[in-house]
Length: 147
Image (cartoon, rainbow, N blue to C red; front, side, top):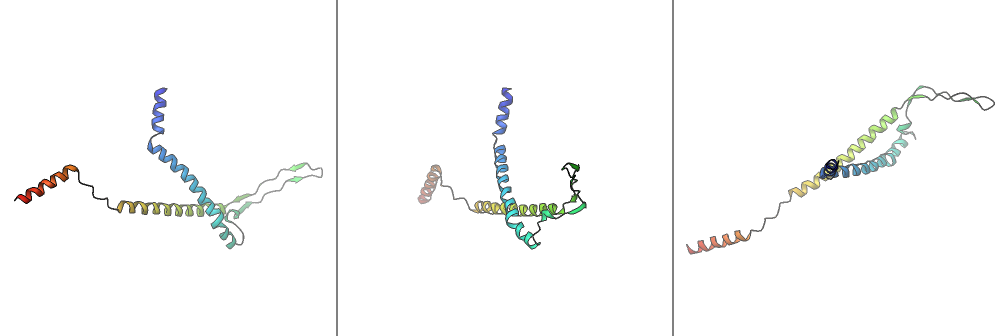
């Protein structure tokens, strides 16, 4: 059992697992931000342009619902039956959400790649010569002078 716990500890503390955990947490937070952007900033103007209806309200009623029937004594005679609907508006909403999330992720990755590329393009400074190289250079120069 101790060996199993040790193996699990090594696995859980590897860099890749920790990086993935951080990525999942940041991804969740980023998802909330983008969801808010879609729901609170982008969709209200679209709903206004559609005359006050949001995509989520758009549906085709395949079978009308039946309201609950109650007798004079207040007893339920017949239970209510919900309408059967095809909610195409939610499908459109999810497509819009996906496209906006994909665009945000694309822009974020593009920005990160641009920053990484800038960093990689900067030439590394010339390393200082070692003490050995300096000494050899001095010896070479002295030998050239004696010729």
